Length: 78
Image (cartoon, rainbow, N blue to C red; front, side):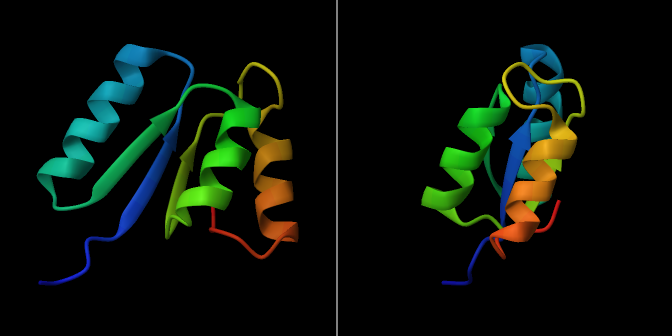
């Protein structure tokens, strides 16, 4: 069985997150969603996605800070 690339979708607008996730899943990606910046960091650490699709305007930490922290930790690209 082949590995499905993991994508973490970080978007506070749930309908947008669902639409993005549905499209990615249709293309064969394993997708998880979170809806705020702090949850994004926690989920990325636990799940180790290959890619993070990240909104800029998020509750908690904004997308720029989430991306900066993920890159500083050597985690998933965003």
